[in-house]
Length: 364
Image 1 (tube, rainbow, N blue to C red):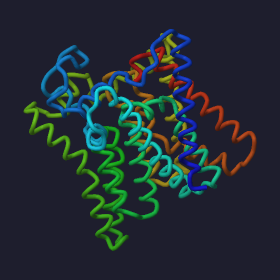
Image 2: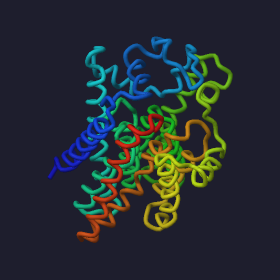
Image 3: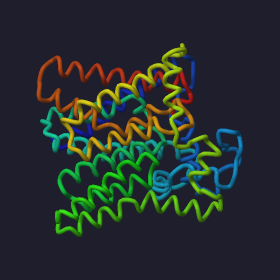
Image 4: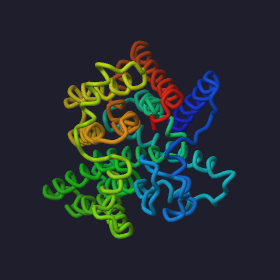
């Protein structure tokens, strides 16, 4: 059924939003899909980086003309292009856009699951799992993750099918949308060069994919460098304003949390990071090298930088190939146990998303 992935995605995301509403009501908190970075993306979409309100500040309570440049432009520019600026409706427009690109991503998930050997059941289970992943609530918010994950899913599927130009274009979009697009850019570029060396696709197609894959990410970083005038450009802005830089301080935070933390969200988020690390070990034997390498790079980037610790689960949404592998396994089993395991994982993810947004406001 052609509509099945879209219907599965919409059903799961609707359940996630309703659960957030119920948990918000139970805690006597206002139900809203506009949290934290959503305000930045909405303002960038409405007026560009130069029009972001001075009341929007970095982690130190400071606003510079270049502060908003830490947020990549792919999602807000698409929002501004497709919808008219209307303060009363812009949040709704953003949710519509996130949902729409999420549906595009759902078909990419199904396609990728199929290329991994998944049955039709596995393809639907893959869509449902990704839509219900921990912190997948951002797929229904003014956040860029739905666009990022859609681009990644189609790029990975295209690489497996040797559709190099599509893979390169999707990597360009991912790199222009979010810093977590960097692992995909690296994998497509390297795989494209190797394929060109081997003469695949007439050699020029994978070579061109390797060239265009970094354009989105590299082009934005270059623009920030030239426009902001800040020495070090984007990396200096995100380091000075938000504390983000490549180091292993988060690893130390993990050990400290497991030894001393009493807050459930922090412990669960750390455990999820460790679960992904453990899952990567057997996945080596079951995932194509390009997809495994991409997923491993996502995990390394997630734990390998400083800055806000509590949003790492959201960053791990990009490691969705591990969920696809679980769905493929369950689809082959075709048993109540397999489907039940998928349902349990999905239910936990939906609950975690709603709980995190209510209990830990810094979770996204």
